[in-house]
Image (cartoon, rainbow, N blue to C red; front, side, top):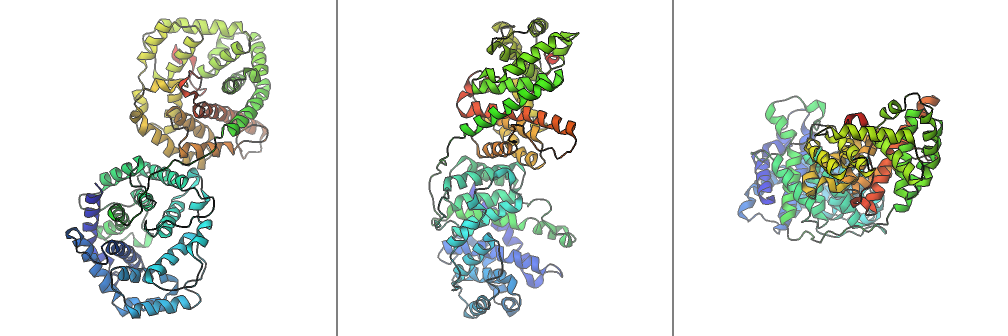
Length: 603
């Protein structure tokens, strides 16, 4: 596949070679074309290096065409002498010369002008962010120019890559900084860098694979191609994500060989112009990087090594502490809340206490709730207003603590009687049926018939909001992943959708949605995935010392109290689900879910 993708991409680039010539670029477009030229020059140079400076292979004819263009532009005094006149753009011209040198075309005059600029105490020493500094060091290395600057190993510790950033926090610009760091530090896969002390290469690979997944789901072929190149540079040529990235690029590549870049890639001043120009300008970079991936896949000098799983300590203790503190806070909040709010808070506290194996942690809230409902005029209506998950958790919690509540008992019996008269239930009511069965209100046979009628196929649809789908999934599965079947490939697209939605929900501070997505990922077997772990870490960092979750950024006491209670309920349920999954309890019948499915739905 990669040979076909590379060949088509290089063919398209060769067919549009005139567009890479700054000498014929329109007014206002020259700098843009110079940048495009150095990028195609790098591709040509790397390919030539793999062939000992030549393009003798039959399938390298298009590379040879591009090489001739780069050589012709580099031979012009009007181009090479810009090194001395535009020192801040040193990398543009030095990169072109580096390509020529890799093609076996050393030019003493061009090299001398670059050397003078480097020695001029500005072009090589003005402030650069780490990945740009690595770019400079790598380019001068390929040019064969001594510079006297610290080695790349002195720069790497300050790079974003080596900081092991959170996947859910990274912008597209951050991801480009990471990919370029890998390119230059590894000399495009030809060497293993001197990584900083404590750097975990398998964890970095895990980061790149997670970012590749996110980029695929966002339909950003440019980043997919760059991240694929990074994985190849680090020696990972055979992994599920590498295979998915290749399949994605092959799918989006146009018949002409062009691979379109993301929206908004052109600056406003370049938007005008004919359709052919815009087609080139918006596709050339992604097409170059796609071709580069093909080159790296077949370059025998590129490192190859097996993919190792990163070593990491379990965070059960951290989750345990967070869940325990949230349970205590919810118990206190439930005592003072209205009855309706108290049911939701008590149910979440009981769910968390069950996960910890200490049901007594929620006993005070459960006792108070049972006392309060006895004073209600219409006890059945009081329970009927609540979500099935919260009510069922209260029932299980009461039983686990050796407590009773006659009105809740009667309500569950009446609800089960209604269900007995039905032949089918919606997918979101399946969890309620399972809970009534577990509480002994429905027979196994009757519950089994109703559960079989709930078709989860609707949860696979792409046209629903990921967080809403995750909540529905939790209601359907009732904390039991085996209900989703053993074919994990069926749910792979759903898990990817949940994972891809996490960064935006974190960025927009929609904590309920973050919690729903994390719970869904845990149910789908992704509790230990890098994106899930980083999402959970984000959630954990929103917890107050009191145990509550979230920072409402409101001054009103009522607004703050309501937001904290709702967020804490959602967060403690999600973290409890992840805790169960990570400790291997996901195959056991564990209660879970979100307090949004009404018992009346099941009836």
